[in-house]
Image (cartoon, rainbow over all chains, first blue to last red; front, side):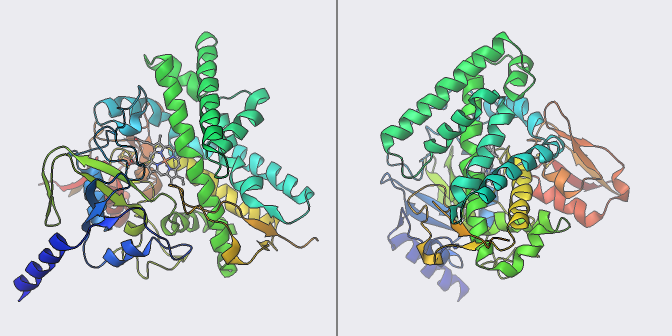
Length: 407
Length: 66
Ligand code: HEM
Ligand code: SF4
C-alpha cells in the first residue's frame, strides 16, 4: 500500500510539468502560492528557471539546510543557474567576490573578513546606529506627514551604516549613499542603475587606493593592512558588502513596519528592550525578503529520494523553509513572542550571511526608535495601495506612505 | 560525560553560537572564529544543543566521553 502510494507519487513527479519561474505572489507576506502548494508534497521538486533551463527547488527547511551544508553543492556562479536572471553565461567570480566561490578560495576571504563582523564588534556599533536613526527621525518630525518611510528612514539607515563601516569619508558620505540607493531604486532606468553601479565601484576603487597610501583605521584599511590582498580584491569585497547589506536590511525594515502597522497590538513587543531581540528574529523569519539562493551539484547527489545530477542547479526557497510547520507551530502567523531561533533567513553553511550581526543590530535599533518617536504612526493609504517590489529579487515595499498625529 | 568539541578549521565565524550561549562562546577579533571562553559543564545543556544544531558550518559537536 505505502509502496504503491510512493510509486504513484514518483510517477506524478516524473510526468508533471516543472514549475516555472517567476512565481506569482498572492498575499503581502506569504511566499508565492505555487511554492506553498509544494510544502506538504515534495521537499524538492523540478523547476524551470528564468533562463529556460531546468533544475530543482528545495522547499523544506531540513532539505535546504542539507543542501547548503553539503560541499558537493557549489556556490560558483559560473556553474550554477542564477535562478532569476535570464542571462545564460555568467563569468566566474571576480577576485574578492567570495559569495560566489567555494572553499578553499572562499575560506581565505571569509576569515579575513569575519573578524570585522563579530557579535561583539557589531554590538559596539549600536550607539552609532542609534544616532543615525535619531537624525532621520528628527528630519521626519520636521516634515509634514505623510512621508515615504522607505526614503526617509528604511533605505538611508543601512546605506549610511555600511558607508561608515567601510570608512567612506564624511564629505562624500551623503553623495555616496544616494548612489547606493539609486543602484537598487526600482524607478531608476537600467542606464541610471548601471551608471550608479559604475560610480559606486569607481569611488570604492579610488577610496581603496587612497587608503593604501594613507592607512586608515576602518574596515577597508584593516583589510589592506592585514592580508596580502590586492586593491582589486579589496574593492570587490567592499562592493559585495554594499550589495549584500543594503537592500536586504532596508527591506526588512520597510516591510516589517508595514506588517506591524497592520497588527499594531504587537508593536509593544518590539519596543520593549526585554523582547526586542526575539521580535526581530521573528520578523526575519516571517518576512519573505530574500527568496533564496542557488547551488550547483558537482557530482550526482541523492537527496530526499531524488537524484540531482552533476551540473544541475538547486534553488533553495528560504521563505518557504521559514514556514516549516515541523519547526514553527502555525508558521504563517507573525507572532513576535514565539521563539524564532532556527530560521534560515541568513542562509546556512559556510556562506551563511557574514553581515547578519550587523543587520540584527540595525533592526534592533531601527524598529523601536521609530515606534517610540511616533506612537501614532499609521499607514497613509489603504494597505492594498502600498506599492510592492513584486518584480525584484529582493522583496519588500517600494514606498511606505505613513502619517502620524501632531502632538 | 558530554564534552564540547570545536573544529576551528570549519568555523565560518557566523556568530550563531555567541548569540545562542553567550556565556560559553566568543569570537576571535582577528578572524571571527569561535573561542570557548568558559567551562561548558555549567552551561544549559539544551542551549548547548541548540548552538550545535544552529552552527551553519557544523564546527561544533557534543560527544560522550567514555
Ligand atoms: C536582514 C538583512 C540580511 C539578509 C536577510 C541577508 C541574507 C543573506 C543570505 C541568505 C546569504 C547567503 C547567500 C548564499 O548562501 O548564497 C547572505 C550572505 C552574505 N551577506 Fe547577507 N543578509 C543581510 C544583511 C547583510 C549585511 C548587513 C551585510 C554586509 C555588511 C551582508 C553581506 C553578506 C555577504 C558578504 C554574504 C556572503 C557571505 C559568504 O559568501 O560567505 N548581508 N546574506
Ligand atoms: S556558530 Fe559555528 S561557524 Fe559560527 S562562530 Fe560559532 S562555531 Fe563558528
